[in-house]
Amino acid sequence: MPQKVDFNKTQKLLTAVIDVAVFVGCLYLSFYLRFFTSLGFIPSRNLNDAKAAMLVSAIGFLAINVLSGVYVLYNKTVLDVWIITVVDQILITVFIMALTFAGRWFAFPRSVLLINLAVSIIVLVLWRTSVFLAYQRIRGVKRVMVLGPPDQISGAVLNYMSNRSRRHRLTQVVDGHYLEQIRAHIDEFDTAHVSDLIPNAERTAIYDLLLGEEKEIFLTTSFEHLLLVNPTIMSIEDESIIAASPFKIPSEFDLIKRCFDFLVALIGLIIASPVMLVTAILVRTTSPGPVFYRQTRITKGGKEFRILKFRSMGVTAEKNSGPMLATTNDPRVTPVGKYLRSLRIDELPQLFNVLVGDMSMVGPRPERPFFVDQFQQGNAHYRLRHNVRAGLTGYAQVYGKYASDFASKLNFDLIYIKEYSLLLDVKIMIQTIKILFDKVSSRGVDETEERDTTVRLPEGVQELH
Image 1: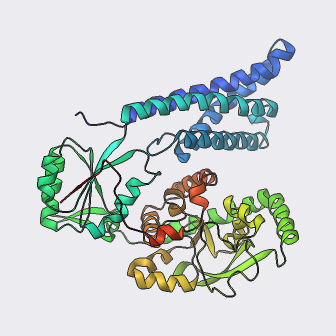
Image 2: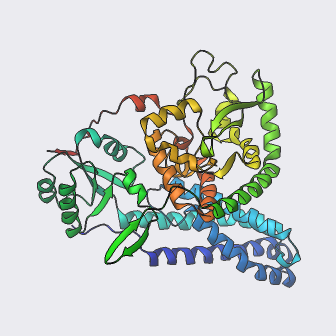
Image 3: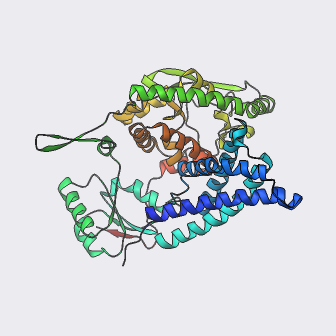
């Protein structure tokens, strides 16, 4: 059976070029709808000024698309494509409007921009939906074989069985005689997920066999793999050496990050102030107690600070239970608090924490000392996430989900520290807007999922020994 393929770089580039052409076409159509239908012509002054501004608009449009992951269709749904398209068009409209305030050199009639917002959303949703459906037909669903000791691969198996695993279908689970089972079922899978707990010699032989058959290989993330993120390749005499980079942000980049955080937090507070005022009134009038909730959290260097949030629970929420992680359908959450949490509005006051330097716009989410002590006992590497400031949003929040266990979130946090760049921060901030519409990302820890890790293979999945 031929191996399923993904969109290659040329196809993605062609999609992006057509995307920009569609966007510019929508701008021209918006001018027509605004002026020609009422005046019978488009004023040359307006059109000439707009032409001069369209290049900047097109570049901004493309940049926002790339940062928000529009052209990464892997493991997305049609709804994801629609949400990202709407969010991106709102962002580019705000961006262009902001430039119109900068001076007459960027003259774009705001009425045209508002018309374009509606027109471009409709046209781009139709265009991108057709691209996504074509992508699904080309790529198909990859069949996955999971290999490893039974007690160590349950997490991977459950992930492939979940509804969130849209582009993968579990076909075999192998817990022994790996090479024999791979050869026997070589035409029945496209991807092999290999546990790092398989003995090294046997694992190397598995890699050789899979590579020879041109099969895709997935690896369970280990700390050793994290060490190899962004390495330096060097040579000593005639030997090649891999130098692992530290889990730290260089001081010069940390200073740039701090300046960026201060500026974004200040602008964010100005823009969000009306929403924060309305929220404060709602919290104060719908449940007894203070508007804000202050709690001790841990940030860079293990330093304690007081995080600021809009109160979303009753004032006696933990009086009897003690510290508890949020759960799905948490009874402690107030009716208003439920909506504040789902839209992350309860976290807006943390912009003040960013402003004073306790937090960053992007970084590992801060935990309470009580839970930090527990997590550090369970994983000695947990302390490494405190090499950077805690964040308002983070890599784990965008690429994981709210209910992920601490070990999974830790892997995402450590990858972020290794791959840090200012561009990555901007990308995560933009993609955070999308997850506000994702119910799975906004819910609490599902206690049923936490207790029940028993793997019950569905019909059609082979269990091989």
